[in-house]
Length: 477
Image (cartoon, rainbow, N blue to C red; front, side, top):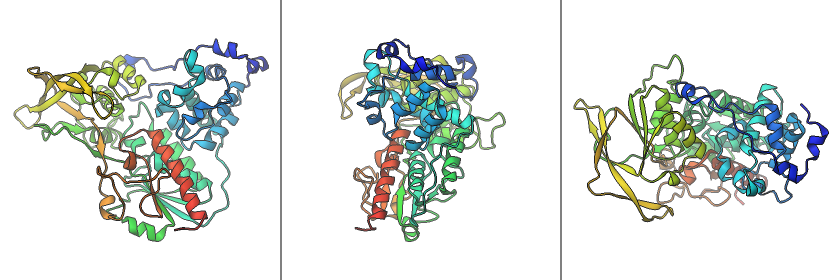
C-alpha cells in the first residue's frame, strides 16, 4: 500500500488535527470467556493515518524514552508512506522482538510519555504502530532480518530464554558471535510464555520471534537447569562469555495464617499452570488448575491483572482484586485495569489480607480482610497503607492467588559463590551489566527484581554490546 503523495506533505498543523486511533478490541462479554487475543490490531489505513500524526521531531525524545532505542521516527515515517516492508526492516534493526513489544511494552510510560505530539493532545500510538508493522511482516512473510555476518569464532552462553536472553542472543548473533541459550523449561520464552496470558501475548507470536532468532544462528538448548544439571563454572570453561538472564521467579507470599491451605497459589504457579501446561486450551492438559467460582487475587500490578482476568476466563463467577492502596497507586498498566473492569472483575481497594480461612477440610474457604487508609509516604514515595482498627471482615472464596512480587531464585547463584550479590540476593552489576566475574554479565529481573519485558530487553542489548567489546578487545583486559 502506498500513501497518496499529498498525504506525505502534511503540515504540522494538519498532523496535529488528526485524532489518535483507537485499538479495535474483542467485545468484553465475549472475551471474558475465551483466551483469544483482546486487542485485534490496526487496519492498514488506520495505521497510515496514525503514523501521519508523527511530527518527525529533530530532537527524538521518543527514542531516548525507549530502553532498546528503537528508531521510532524512521519506522513511523515509512508507515506514513505506506512502505511497510521498509518499516519492518528499520524496526527489526533495533528491536529483536517487535511483535512482542508492540503487545506488552508499557509505551505510555516510556516512548509515548515523552512524545512531543502528546504535549497538546494524545501522543502518537507508537505501540500500536510497532505491533502493526511486526504483524504485517509476519502475515506477508517479509524477511526483515539483517544479513548474518562473518563468524568471529567467539562463543557466548546465555542463561534463560526470556526477553533479556533472547534480545542478547539476537544482538550477539548480528555481531557474528555464536550465541547459545540454555533454558530450564521445555519451551522457550520465559515470562513471555509462562507469565503472560494467551489473550495478551499469543504463544504463536513467541514461537515466531524465537524462530527468527534461530534463523540468525542462535542455538537453544531446553531442559538445562543451570545450577542443577550444569554449573556456571562448567559453562565458563566451554564459552568465552556468559550472560545470565534467568529472571526472578521465586514467589513472595503474604506470611499470614492459612497460606498452606489447598487452593492458595502464587501468581507464578497459577499462570504457569494455565500457560505452559495448557489449561487455556479447549482440551486442557492433564496437569490440573483449580477453576474457582469465587477467586481472590491479592495485588495491583500487571501480574495481578493477568491472574484475575485468567481466573475470569476459567469460569469464575466472581473474580476479585484486593489491593491495599487506591487505584491511583496501582502499578498495573492503565489499559490492563480498563480491560479487567470491562470483563467484570471486581476491584476492592484499600483492603489487605489478615489471614486465609479454611472450609474445615483443608481447602480455602475465605480471606479475612482489613480496611486500610493511606498514611505517610514510604521508601517508594507512595503513601503507606495503615490498617483501620476494627475493620476486619471475611470474604468468601475458594481460590486465592498471591501476586505481590517475586524474589531472586538462588538456584544458580548458590552454586556460584564468586558472584557478588546484593542483600536481596540479586546479582550486582555495573551500568554495562558486568558482574564481579570478568567474563560473566547479567541483566533483567535477576538484577532488577520484578520489572518489565522492555527493561529486560534493554539490559540484553546493553549486555551484548559490553560482551562484544570484552571479546574484541581481549578477554580479561
